[in-house]
Image (cartoon, rainbow, N blue to C red; front, side, top):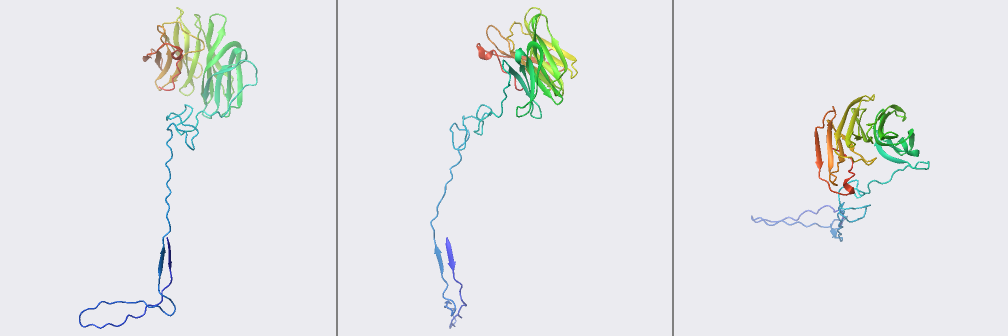
Length: 316
């Protein structure tokens, strides 16, 4: 809308009126002055337009819309497409050793500063561990001993870390091996355990009370059957307690084994205990003070490979 106005001159005096007693209407006229013409007001109406903004497409809705890198229609993060319609688990860095031969990472743990402690086996199928910065640049890489073995559980804390797994012996197969490492990867203390009745090995490790250690895995018993084996160590390597829960079967496929989560009161161990070709999930909660399990829970399973190797528990 455009409005224009010219300035008006002084108003002329109104003409006198006569009255016979009854009031007469009074009128006034604006006369043009000598210096200004009559006042006019002009109004021009311009066309108006309305812009409608389309609402943003909902994310996720299963359709790939503008501004979305992906849309899988669910609000689950970490499944390849996050709930903000951006990819999850994008490759940021990767590491390939320059050596030739078989090597494999079996376990990783992340430090508070973003660095990574990894364990597995290196050349010659020997126990290997390494520490990487947050961009996967190698800080140190170390093989431990010449005997064949594997590190399958790692745990980290401010003053170093723990590695645990197994080492192959000539007597009765594999024995448990574990060690505390300083920040540079050197062994502070280590221990080897063998039942004398068959394979024994650790598959997971966790820090407790700042810099103590709990490990879990399998141990063989005198009858040749398999026990669910859990042990707690003080920071100096002193054994505090050991829990052995009979599984009632001989069923170990190295290096598969139980997972471990530490709660404020328990070490919770998980595995699948085979029964009549069915593999139900099995949780066992051992008090952090040791002793008999506080509780056990068995979830129905079904036959087939997918239930033989349950994932390690992420949280309890």
